[in-house]
Length: 396
Image (cartoon, rainbow, N blue to C red; front, side):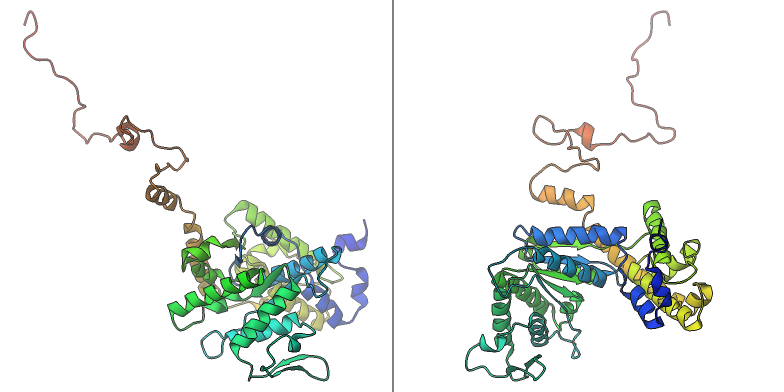
């Protein structure tokens, strides 16, 4: 077995400058179980939308959602590389990060500007009404959009651009920023606008963000019908399979750290789980900082002396975990069996038991008493019901 297969990184990296070694590890994507499952579900939803216009990918902060976006974009580009297309301007995917508004309200003007720059269509300045001015390129060829261009013009231009580019998906990271509006009514308008953009451009819109996105789908029934939600969960230490995968993840990181002596991270799994809350992104951030410290100190391996100075305060982690667990609880409640029984009752169907069996019905179609009434135990001192004898017995 080669040194590279054992270590997980090219051996020659050890002779490279510090910046190159640090960049290798910072950009290294580890394909762990949670990422694989979410990645496969997202690609399937994009490739086979079946009438879906909005795809929501939700998960706790630091779970690795940005890594998911980068990997999905790469795969969609590879999918299109070997496929001949009749559209010369086709690009496989357009991806942006939704900006956090400075004024407190989400800005569609800023959003469309960033989206157009991301698409960067060569003839963009020539595809709007002649009365519109303010879109041009500088000497370096970069697209510039002046503040004089109105939001409706930007939206119309965006729709034309996406229709011409024909991407498989339009991906928006940090999509929870859409919720930053002054009123609930305007929040519904936000989602209606996104649904309209997806319909007008015939392009699936993927919204990647925190659990806060879930409330957007409850605004009306039409949004819920045309959307699909994909959960990107963290690892839970109280679940044996999750703990096994988390330790496996630490072993993988051990092999990919360009150090002359492989560190022992797995034996410190409780510390790393506490610091990451089971989120891969948070774990990778901590290891990036610790690895940088080890390189600067010239250490051959990674020990607690390098990672402990970068530990987060317990209060901060406690507050983060409390918020994450609250959102996870709300997500799980969507699949609660009581909601199914309520739904079946609203539809005029028979409620089901926890095992999925229907209650037995009597002659009139109503559930029989045997299946709806549980036998109760008698109170202490209470006789069991039976027929007492009446009258005198012979010979008495």
